[in-house]
Length: 146
Image (cartoon, rainbow, N blue to C red):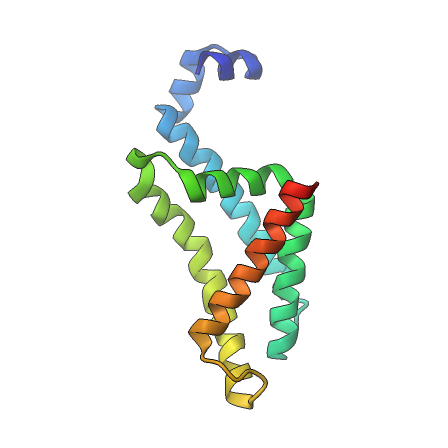
């Protein structure tokens, strides 16, 4: 906290005053990033149209765009999504699930329409997992290959 307060140009007690603890600061940062991501995702969704394939493609394009334009936020998200401290595990699951549940519902709906129309010949759960793996792979490649 001392290093952080020096970098911010404030005294450590000021940070504790506004955030209560290191945990409170961590949650505030996480919420800020997740809310900004959700707002950008919601704005992007307005342009995808009603076609399920356009929605899926729109999400993939959004994920790549977001990663390329918000590299620090994406690194933060991945770092704490994959390796958050054990004492924060339960609380962080709740924080991250709000964003993930919205994204999952959107994609499952589009994938269901693709399955029902015959565009996709696997079940929705498998299609969803493969799509998320693809998007995660794109994200990792962007981050680690610059």
